[in-house]
Amino acid sequence: MGDGIGGAAFRVIRRGILLAPLWAWLLMLVAAPVLILGVMAFATPSDGVPPFTLGLRFAAFAMLVEDFYYAEALLAALRLAATTAGLCLLIAYPMALGMAGVRPAWRLPLLALLMLPFWTGFLLRLGAWIGLLRDEGLVNHLLRGLGITDEPLALLYTEGAMLAGMVHAYLPFAVLPLFTALIRLDPALLEAAADLGARPARLFFSVTLPLALPAAAAGFLLVFIPAAGEFVIPELLGPPEAQVIGRVLWQEFFQNRDWPLAAALALALLALLILPIRWFQRLGAGV
Amino acid sequence: MLKATGLEKRFGAVPALAGLDLAINAGEFFALLGGSGSGKSTLLRVLAGFEAPDAGALTLDGQDLLPVPPWARPINMMFQSYALFPHMNVADNIAYGLKRAGVAAEDRRSRIAAALDLVGLQGLETRRPQQLSGGQKQRVALARSLVMRPRLLLLDEPMAALDAGLRERTGLELRALQRKTGAAFIMVTHDQQEALALADRIAVLEAGRVAQIGPPQEVYARPATRFVARFLGAANVLEGRMRDGVFESAEAGTDIGTDLPAATIAVALRAEHIRLTSADEAPVMTGILEDAAFRGDDWLLIIRLRGGARLRVVHGAPPPAPGSAVGLAWGTASVVPLFA
Image (cartoon, rainbow over all chains, first blue to last red; front, side, top):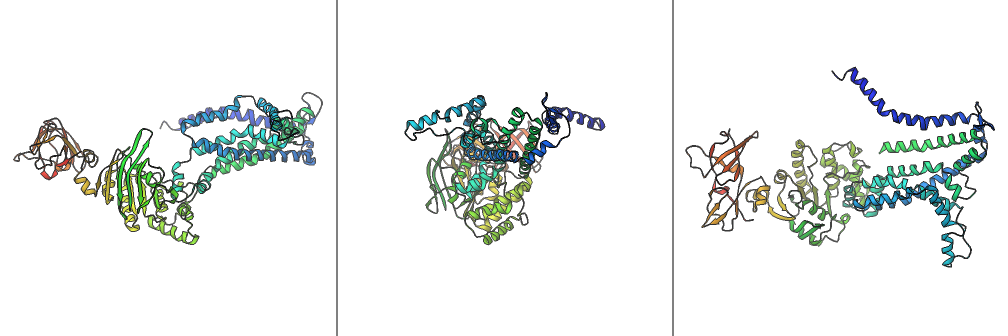
């Protein structure tokens, strides 16, 4: 009786109140910026402030298709993101296994250690890599001091330095979902597999690995998606030819001041990243 | 077939097994009965190879089992949680052990079909564990173990996760399966009804040791210690001592029984063996009816004796009012001497 029309209305209102912050967040920080980018991408560049005049011009999108420079930058970014995410997974899996394998009392300190880098500035940590890898840096000093090389090795501004910086920055995002999945893995499943004749290696590949697969996919994407738009690390550690999309975006926005082109580029990146996100949602639903 | 001697296992300062001896015969249904902390689960895990004992020996057909890792032991286990692989369907779960043993594909198919037939789950091959009911999961777990044709199957509380209504029937099916396969079953349980009903022999565990071992009827009728008497069927235990061939019990307020061994330190009396005397009958003992509870088939009476001890008595008819004085009697054979 009390649960009639009045009750239903009350439930709708209560749900509205609960969801309001989420909707506000999505509107202000996702929908509005995308809308602004959309409007900007069709505008005409100019010398004023802001450096564009509104209109309906497709030149920016045409440029993306015509000039392979941009497609290559997108590809380079995806390649870098995939390599980074793959390397992060390879390193994160044994780390997560180790962290999940210790006594529960040790897990929190290990987790804190994993998060420790976030307590120092991101740029500061990249500066440390530069200090390590430059010609007069610690690594080259050590190599020459031990007589392994005569000339300083070119370590900085290479693919390797860039990847090291990327993996260093994004590794925790790959470890966390794997760690969570592995500590929730029922030890009885592993014992059952052993009981049925599985040796440790077989047990790992037939039980541990497949059951942590959704978490591995989550870790991969948590690294892949932000890494695809990364521009600071390639800029500071990478070789000049590593023209990833993030760097190109930065140049178009702040050096060429072609905001419509930059906006179109940003939208293209967004469209590309929606695919793996959808793929991940399907994977998560399937398990 | 399986022989354990002097098994010891500590977890930190807590002893789980304290010099446990046990021998299991081929083809028998054996129940390990004990409360929590009695060491029954630890014993099962030692037998399966998941825990290494700190001391003691374990042999199967005279062969040392302790250096053999779990995957190489000719023993299979059914887990209390069933531990079905959630990423495999029913058929793949059952196939898992056969694949590890290198059984050929067509052989595997026929053995999986036979195992599903055995537990009555034909047609569920492609279901995932998440799509099964509790009873079906239990059967898949059983089929997954039995398809390996083990000579010894360990069952950790196999019926604990089932509904009460399903438990009785499943228990009988379990025993029928055991007879059919001829494998020795070792079942761990805290449920004495289950152990008494199904097992050929039971062992009551107390603090990491076997308190008593034998056929269910024998252990139930002649408990050897206070612990076993109280644990199995919640017998009344009266403390006392032997003097001049008579058992004197201060708790009861009178002497009890005759012809008891000189080493008797307590006696056990089952609630169902005590009856209220009628007016024209001389009682063995008298007491005050403190409380009565109707249980459906009968009444449970709590009767305080002159010495202060309380007896549980099962009574078949409506009892007198609480506070009444009642006379009690029993057959001399019902008095079981306890030595520890």
